[in-house]
Length: 445
Image: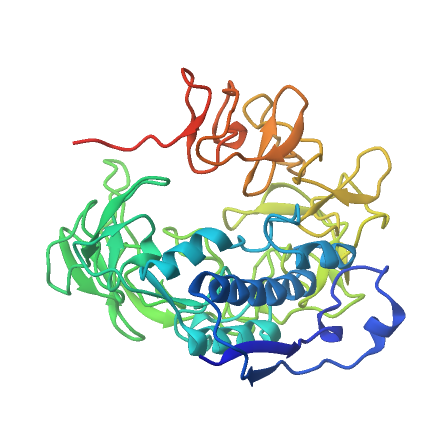
């Protein structure tokens, strides 16, 4: 089998974060992703699975810098990959060893062509893009590096093992692959519909396209479309209003009103436009360039943040905060860069927080970083930025030390924590109070 190797990535075009990046990286021209085939000896399935996943990690880390998920100074740490890097806020790292075992068992197969297409796309795609423009099965949270091999009726642990179906297993448990119901078939909480359909009144119904009538279900229209004009009605005795169907439409265009329908809290502007909630009458606008004044969270172009934006109160036309102080579009900051902790948007990447005392960006959510549990903090007022210092995936907040620690695997010794999921020391499992070891809690019939 011919291996797949990434020879170069879009490095310089990805410098979205940090004034600390070396000048040579800032000045270089964006490079295209070059994928080459090498005639390397065929490796055992687990090793090939690990190699494919590490290629995913490389692309994800570059994209994380470009899109402001991590700072430029964290790139090398991110590239170490799962188990060797404390960074996990990069769309979720794959469980390399477990995936390798599943490949060896024939429950997954490496999809080299799908992986290659998705890697090339994610390495150069904008941070916000229409899902329809991506290769089939390619999402920002992962790459089609594997193909499911378990048929309906076969034993499974994960959804991505099931060919044309879903797995009934709870996290950390075993289940059975079940075929999805076809259009017109029965569906419910225990029976999902095939892709491109949704469950409506117990029957799978095809999702509607542009110009077709739609109702209140959030999946009624195909991805990227909105149910324009839908009104659920009101059966209040003092203000009865009949329900009204809508029409599936493409996202709102430049200059169009963008207050979403009452059934949706999502933005409705076509990508890459944003809804300018800093305006009393919000309309779709083009992303703003570096240095421009900004009045909403996603107003700035890729790699930029609306630093200094302060929100408070409620916007008169929708379920959004009002704008108290506008911000300015700047390059996403990095560790040690000056920031304003009182602003709703500090300008720090998602993996960092603006330190209250030092007023500089610092790491958060990883092993050893300070943390607090939302279960023991007071609710944040609407006019203050959310500052709960929780921990990222595969880490938990140890309430004794108030620091983030690595979650434990099945069978490892643990100490039960007094609060909720974010304080659970076991990964996809629970700390058994009797045995003091991580164990799965699987449903029994």
